[in-house]
Length: 155
Image (cartoon, rainbow, N blue to C red; front, side):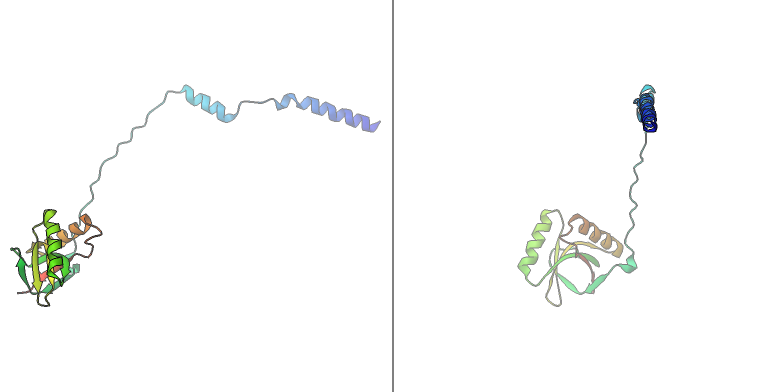
């Protein structure tokens, strides 16, 4: 008899709990419905363009190779020059010279005392100007002329 009362009690508890399991609207859906009712506010974010600050190379740290060179082709060789190629063979040097002239450079071909031909694409009186030009050429033609270097003319 005890087990019948126990079974009856469990059954009544189960029947009483069914209305409590009724599905309710989720809290997320309620928040979503409230958000839909509110007018949308557009956020405007203004971005200001910032130009990078150019810092010229530190002249003391710019490596320069000193050589006595004579002009073979071209004129106007100054104290500091940007060299993009160095060849033992004059034909190879002339080939690079022609390619760079096609890109708009005024190229000078010079020869050092060891009979090496230097292909010079820019020449300046000031070391800083030459270093800036070298860096510009490296950036524009990367990686082709990443090993461009500065030559200081010895008289």
